[in-house]
Image (cartoon, rainbow, N blue to C red; front, side, top):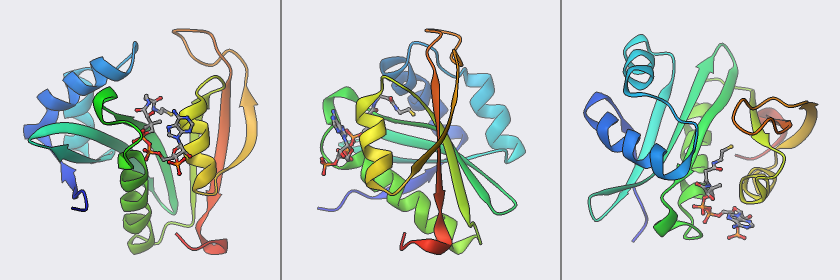
Length: 151
Ligand SMILES: CC(C)(COP(=O)(O)OP(=O)(O)OC[C@H]1O[C@@H](n2cnc3c(N)ncnc32)[C@H](O)[C@@H]1OP(=O)(O)O)[C@@H](O)C(=O)NCCC(=O)NCCS
């Protein structure tokens, strides 16, 4: 059965915090999620497997730009197409919202994420040296142009 990607909101914040803690050393707090959702600063979409939040993606839509803020899949459910399903759903939302380009930053060592973004057609446009406060790793900046591609 196809995994259903749905929009998440305030009632899901407890599950989001748990999933973030499993996936990242440096993660968002309950307050950051609640403030962002309340202010409409970002959208959060997610997918459940047997009631468990198995993956989520947070992204902002400002004017004609989409920025990926966070994307994570539960370690037990990786390599099963969920990252791809989340990204594909966000692209559908973008095409309904007049978005023309998307940006993200990713740690230079994050091979799974790099492979996923490249598979979707993102291209590297720059590097921010020692960008991440937790590891002091470089960030790679990626961009995707919707008008030149089929989402
Ligand atoms: C990156 C992440 C979201 C991928 O999610 P996922 O559900 O496992 O990915 P999918 O199963 O949808 O894989 C889709 C594509 O991503 C790439 N990919 C995913 N995991 C990979 C891995 N371990 N090694 C290499 N490529 C990988 C492949 O291109 C894959 O396509 P393929 O199956 O045809 O080879 C997941 O590994 C994760 O949550 N990592 C920790 C959090 C994180 O780093 N998030 C990104 C922050 S920028």
